[in-house]
Image 1 (cartoon, rainbow, N blue to C red):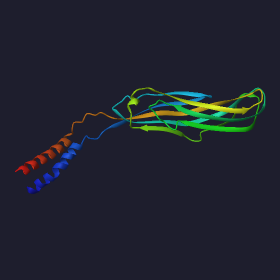
Image 2: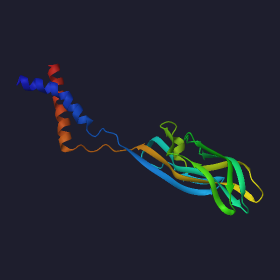
Image 3: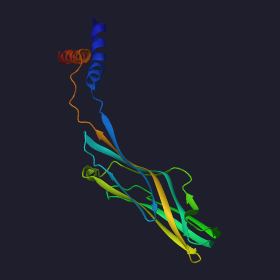
Image 4: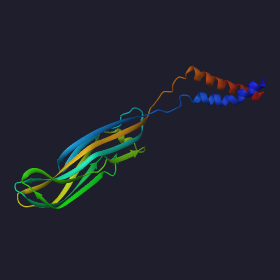
Length: 224
C-alpha cells in the first residue's frame, strides 16, 4: 500500500504535465506567390511585376522575398546599309524598383563589353557581340519585424534594364543595344494559425485525470 502511494506522489506531477502538454503544439503555414518573366527588347527594358499582399490564414510572423534571374544579357546589334568597321564600348545595368515594404538586395546588376575593331557587313539586325550572367543570380529579403505593411497590397515592382553605348561607326551603320531578362519574383508569407484547442482524446483525458487525482491525494495526505 505504501509503495503504491509513494509511486502516486512521484507520478502525479509527471502525469499532469503529460496530459497538459497534449495539443499544445503551435501550427504554422507558408503561402507562396510568384510572378515569372521572360522579356527581350531594345534597351531600355521595362518589366512590370506584381505580388499580392498577405491575406491569411492566421497571423503573419515572417516574410521571405526573392528575385531569381535565370538569365540577363545584352547584345550590341547593327543595322547596316553598307559595310564598314566599327568600334564600341557598351554597358548595361539591371535594377529592381520595389515598394518600401520590401528590401530585396542587392537589387542591381551591371554588365559591360568592348570591341576595339569589328567588321560589319551590310544587313539589318546583326548581332555583333554580347555578354550575359554566367550563373544563376539570386536577390533576397527576409523579415519577421514590422510586418503590418505586408497586409496592404498588391505590391508593384519594375525590373528595368538600361544601357550606354559609345561607338565609332561609318556612315550608313547604326548600332543599338538589346537586352533579355528571364526569371521569377516571389514572396512567401509564413503565418501562425489561430487554432481552437482540440478536445482531448479519451487516452489523453484519462492521463490528465490520473495526474490530477494523484496530486489531490498527495495534498490531502499533507494536511493530516
